[in-house]
Image (cartoon, rainbow, N blue to C red; front, side, top):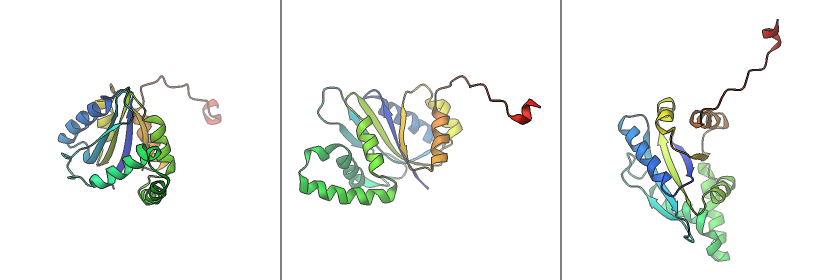
Length: 176
């Protein structure tokens, strides 16, 4: 099963840098990138720039129409008329079949702002314990995935910065 993930970066160049890293990891067969798209929002611009990537292993598994509709739903609704807004509401219902619900849309809208970038990925076969060290130096936030809550928590933990472990609380068995 493919995983749809959205990674947010605090710089306009961050998403492209991460994609380059992931493409290198794909050559090592540590992940399969089936499809991807980048949103770059340079500081001072009124709206973001979007780019669908065409060199992926899945040869555009989702296709330009999917990315175009998703990005339209995410970033351009405020500029559309009310009638088109109703049509976009119907599309939002369609996207919920793929795990893209209002919560996802609102989260991406709130976090991808001027001066940032985002990488939208459709991947499979990720070897997380090998990928995590390769991307440790890059600052990013996992905004959303279509993984289960438990899988998503494990993914977030794998990519979290190394933090000192909190002392473990003593259990009654350990105290005896």
